[in-house]
Image (cartoon, rainbow, N blue to C red; front, top):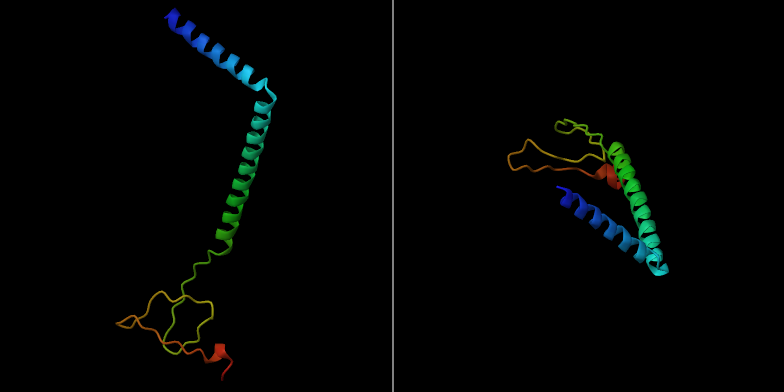
Length: 101
């Protein structure tokens, strides 16, 4: 049992000594600084991405279902998801959109 604890302490000492030797060099300190800056930028980018996704989903999630009958006027921003026709065909007259009477 004592031997296991001693080996674990030695491993920690070796790791810490190695890190101290590596980061005593200027170039390794420089690369550590660059890595930390990139990590900070990545975290900021991720936060902006999450907040934009939440705003987008809140803005465009109306989800209203509109039932229309034959010859009803249709709003221009409506998306057709089904018809009562056997073939699923829908005929739309676009004269009002084209500027015709």
